[in-house]
Image 1 (spheres, rainbow, N blue to C red):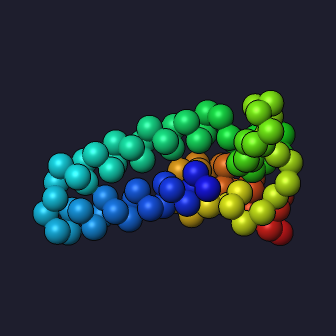
Image 2 (cartoon, rainbow, N blue to C red):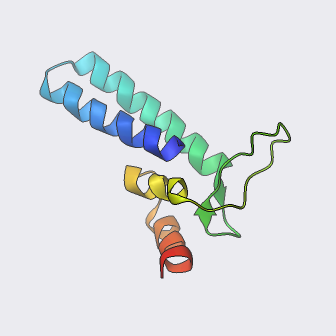
Length: 93
């Protein structure tokens, strides 16, 4: 879901630029940068080669189940080239 949120922030910041709402565009880009950094710090699983989800059971663990939501970070542009390549190679090919 975080990757989907990042895609929304990116799209809304571009829209805000087009309609000349520079302050809103700047705020949305700032949020994108902050959330993207947190996504890469906390949700990237190097061993699995994919962004993982936090389990909702309160134990702060990550889920090993893979779904389409695990790939939204690539779509949002938050993933580095090496992260996107790792996810695509391991999970899509």
